[in-house]
Length: 145
Image (spheres, helix red, strand yellow):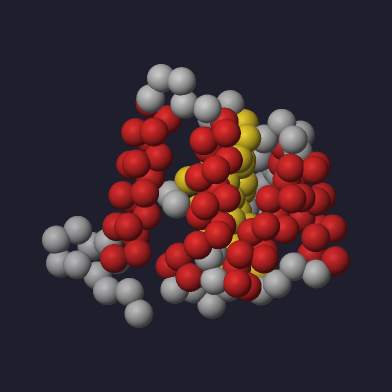
């Protein structure tokens, strides 16, 4: 279980994610930072995941690469993410990151998912079968639009 510190109100997992994001921002600020470095960082994060989450992250990466090659792989708060013009469009939040019951496929503001006055921005995932993969393809294609 994650604990909350008295000083900041953040859990240990949240503080770790904030530190990872600070390191990512520092790396982005370096001159000559390459997309290959971002891809390597994403793949390294995926490799660290427990097997069930790693399989889902690899599948999502393959789907995003196939249906939205214009999105750049990177890490975001220590999670696999895919961005357009430096802004994260979608991301994979593994359950183990914050001690959750399920992983999430999430979408940020640059995603073109608007549907009237209300729409989901995160989808819970326990595993990715063919049905889920098809839905992820649709969502990523629309989001990257």
